Image (cartoon, rainbow, N blue to C red):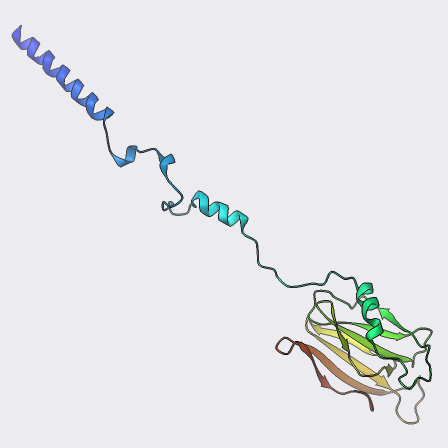
Length: 203
């Protein structure tokens, strides 16, 4: 009888001891995960709440600058800056008009719009307005040139212009003279570089 009481008492003491250890555990693994702060190092492959907020509110860098003006606005606002079609004044009422505004690009380093005179003929003076990101730069030549030039884009910052003129003894319809020029936007000087040829007396 005395032996049974001893075993029972020992078992009761063991249960109380185990219960006390479980309720008073101070192991770090038992701390709630919600106690992690933004300064804590996140697990590999995850982000802290602060990092996630910063990433979602970041503003991407601008990819370039573009004008807000349309081709028609760009031409109308600057066409008065183009020199007269007939510098000698023999046709004082000659008025520049745009042939095609589709070649204007408000986001291109270099774009253009070709002009001719209203009610002109095939050999009437032509001129070309140049633009950088929609900003007017000036014209390809100091004065207008007879015959509308053929212009193609080489890159975002360069165009090629083929001028035509009538050689001595040729009619306007049979004009065979050709001169090829390239115009390139130079970001270092923020101006247009010219290379190639112009028709005689033009530049």
